[in-house]
Length: 130
Figure 1 (cartoon, rainbow, N blue to C red):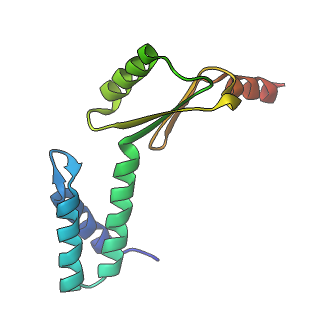
Figure 2: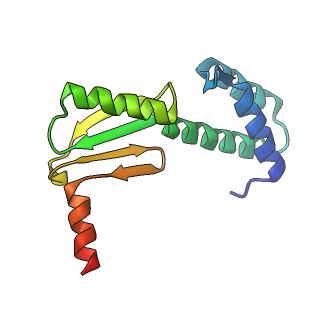
């Protein structure tokens, strides 16, 4: 579905109104969506679709996934948490997981940013260079 410029502007305004202290508030989002559904302005489906996209992108930016080959020690966890909080700001939800396929190192994904310092990625890069 093609979204008009006006619908994008309206969705951005709604998104900005739904924020409290820089983070989207669930109750305000529900109230905004209910108000749009009741009023049914021109292109309201496109407005809601773009608002959903903005909310999903914001959630992705505030979610970090850290993978390591073995269970990360508490010192490493706190160091990674501090570094990610410094870089991306407060309100970041960080999850740690183990992935034995990495062989060693870490892979960190925050939104569309991926930092891959794993042995597997280095071996793949080396294989591609030959």
